[in-house]
Image (cartoon, rainbow, N blue to C red; front, side, top):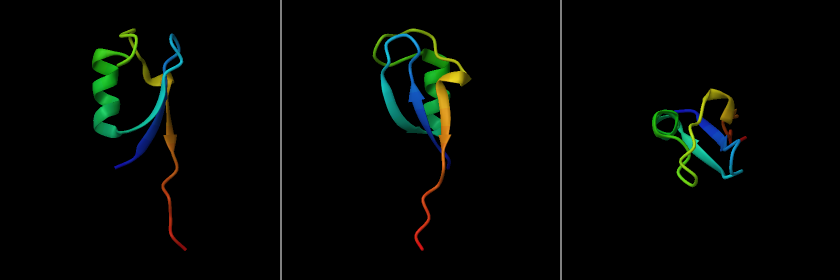
Length: 51
C-alpha cells in the first residue's frame, strides 16, 4: 500500500500515513486542528527498495 506525506495547510501538522489513514483524513480532516483536508495536502512517498 502506498504511503503519503500529509501536511495540513491550516496548522502545519505533518506526518506520513498509509492509504487507509489518508482516506480517513480526507473524510474527517486534520487530526490536530480538525480543519478539512483535501487531496492537495498529500504527496505520495516513493517506496523504499533494498538493493
